[in-house]
Image (cartoon, rainbow, N blue to C red):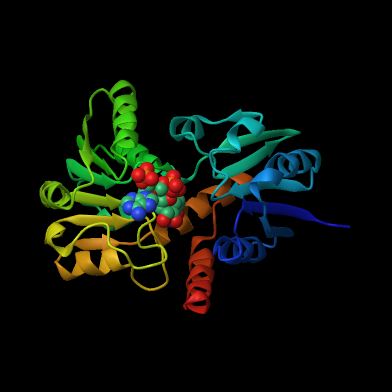
Length: 285
Ligand code: NDP
């Protein structure tokens, strides 16, 4: 007889840190829930979602790469945050209906607030990337009051599409697409008070999206990439005097937001952070 469960659907999922800190959260408040990572190849996604819907003991799920966008049409409804960025990272259950949500926006916003630590949101931000994480970051930046935004992406057309959408949904924002050209990116970064890195560069290979010349003192840098230790981008930004943070806090805080949605309770953040740090140390290569 299996008890209540929360699933993490992804492919691959074995390196995810979410099971460690989510399970610690459930255990710490005495909720008998098992958080279980399940490797779901794309061809199996529809079947797994149908099984999830049919099993009331499954309270919900997290969704990660590569299913965040593809899962949307398989669900029964979506909240505004998930619709806004076209990606689902959290599923909750309402009876037999599955609701798609996105807590990456809340996670990014909380990580940004932590980095700013009470200081004013810079007026001008440069965002590198135009995928799901970049869209979540941009939604959070808009909520934080950014006035001017440059979006640089390797495939410029993707950034241009995003800019066109933002001109409709956030008309007060001054927004432009910037080409993926090193010299131009350095200039853009130098004038921006906040640089957000949201590409997959640096995830596995330490590759840098920006050269050291892009960074300066008085600038904030938020890298959504998370690797054990310091990402190469954060290292480079700090060496130039910028205040920088990697994606660890965003990961933890989007998880805390999801926990509250599943349970209706505040997330035990200190417990989750401790489990996250411990899991990080054991996953260090
Ligand atoms: P997507 O696949 O949606 O987007 C990938 C982005 O990376 C695109 O902008 C893509 O550009 C760019 N990119 C890929 N390869 C290169 C390259 N060689 N050179 C330049 N740009 C490149 O992925 P996500 O947005 O979901 O994820 C992006 C990163 O954010 C990942 O590292 C992921 O781990 C991280 N992330 C962190 C979270 C956290 O909680 N900390 C949450 C979600 C994501 P193009 O369009 O030109 O292909």
